[in-house]
Image (cartoon, rainbow, N blue to C red; front, side, top):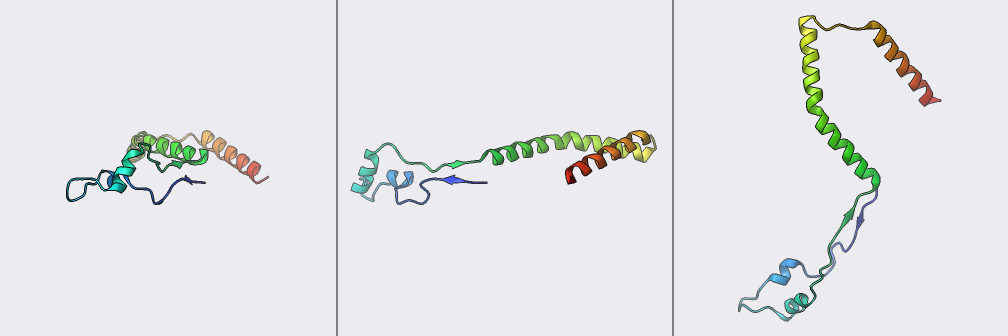
Length: 107
């Protein structure tokens, strides 16, 4: 992950310094010079594609957590009152699929 930070900590006057007024109500010559140039350099940060993708994944997980919580609560309730039915064939199939994928990943 790479960050691209430009003009960080340079000796350029800040916007606050450019607007500061001396005790007599007049701007100093340095402040007048900084006002003459209207373009002020700005710092920037650029996120890599990987960082942007991680951010999108995090946002999706946060938005899905509410629906997952409600689904989990309904399953807990069904288990507690004995109405939750387990399909043994489906569990066995999922376990076989997982092991097959695991073996493929290990090569």
